[in-house]
Length: 451
Image (cartoon, rainbow, N blue to C red; front, side, top):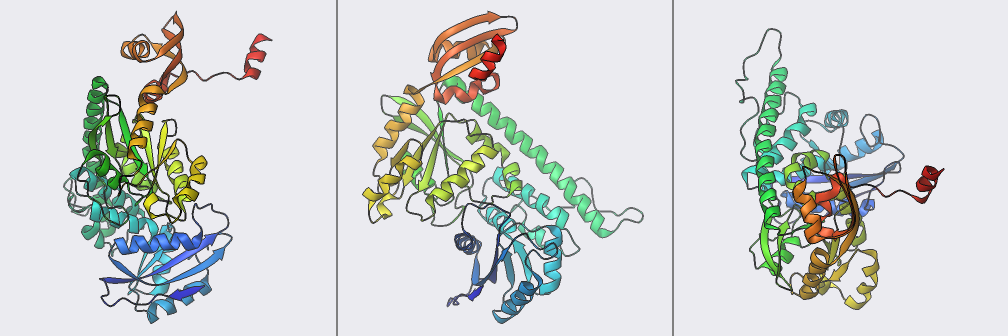
């Protein structure tokens, strides 16, 4: 099925045509139509004008061109008719798919996939040196297997300011029998190695900063959520901060941390993080490892959900999937059902509370429900206790003391090599004890041991 979208009066720099395939062998969180709507928003955020879209249902992606040969011919005709300059696929294309589609559509039409589009948006929105390095790394690792002689657009796109591939480590002269393409690939590999070393320094700095925060005993609340769910607006309202806010996808990439006074004279550090999205590129997750560790090391997650969005529950599940991928699924969660002010019938929406853990309806823009949200956060950080069973090495004296000081010890046994402790601790401290947790045995396992 294909349709053309009316042109705008002020056409942007490039005209884009979208392609989506409903592949029965793959599981996506959003239906195809909604996923293409999201892709159109991504294209708009990247500064493109969407002039049409084409869809197809498939059992499996076509081995050569992802969509079938007949659809490729239809796409070519539509692209020529609409003066399309960029064709964007809603899934990640293999290097072969991209190469064959480029041949079929002609040299005047660039072929991008969802991953390349998201990488381009990240390159536009990264402002800190860390963010630019992370994006540059993800771009180079994505483009390396797709490299051809016509790769000079990378110099324009990659990272926004981190140097040019092929200029690091003295690369530039060809050896005997070496092609220019091989030299270019070697240059990119050198650049990747250099960026990874720089990001290792960032990771070390973050670890020192986190250790300092733990010594201060101030818990951290990491804001997570689907892109454009309103995390930055909510953070601004709660902390009177001035985080950049825009009605677009991935408006902010660089983490922002603010200290907040909680009810009962408690304190917490609130950290805004990059928004998630379905089909978030794996390379981005790996490149943003240091930033995403802020989430995995947090004491509590505040999951911000745009409850006014028709796919709110699907977006919630997409974020949960990403949290599992980065090892943050064990951290306690409070859910802020944001943008309640946009609902025609807020009372009816309250029936959905059961679908979300520890849910509080709020409006980050209007400020509604924020006192209830802060009370819930305080309860989770300081009042809610979680059962735990750990064996701590004697070298972990700080954790042993922390258990005694902040928790409730029911059983303690001093054994060879460590201390076994059982009891309850505030949920926010669970992450610190995770490496030494003893999994509870099932009734069947206990019965087998007795036999």
